[in-house]
Length: 213
Image 1: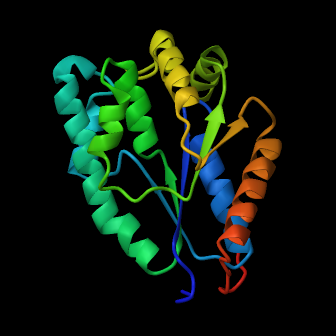
Image 2 (image 1 turned 90 degrees about the vertical axis):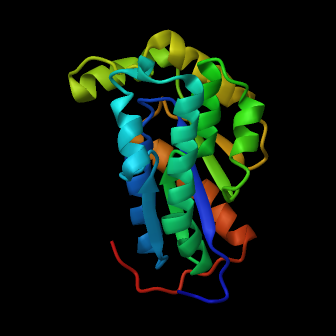
Image 3 (image 1 turned 120 degrees about the horizontal axis):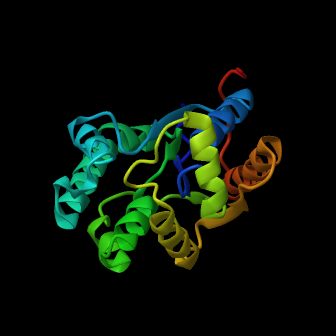
């Protein structure tokens, strides 16, 4: 830890199939190679609320939209309290695979007001950078089917993903940096690295740990 550093929060967002989890891992390795201390995390978490959310993947109709939103919010409260806030306090770089922008997009696509969803998440630290991976739903669905060899879950239907993608593209928060994910893995990773390098430079963030891979 470098006490002079303010912690950095970076969220990787986008519709399903854009490679978020893979890019979180690649970015973490890149930053650790520069001597940065990094925490990798994700939402939904593995906690009790996150496990309940994952049950909805195969039976989303088992609860109301309001109940679903409450699950995401309570999962995030626990995530912030137990993982994100302590890491930021230590001056670390936190990489999260999904954050409240996903909630606003997916719940908004289901019929809720995205502005209300954002307001309900005002307790959560605002990211320093959101990497929004963009891709047409048609391509993302092909990727999902090829990588898993299984049926799509209730959050991955094409009409749903199209509405989610439209909402993601409508968000105008200045922390969002859109990157075309329909490119080679290496190209997308380099674009993300450039955006993060700029963020660290702008924030005078100094990586002082031992270089690792």
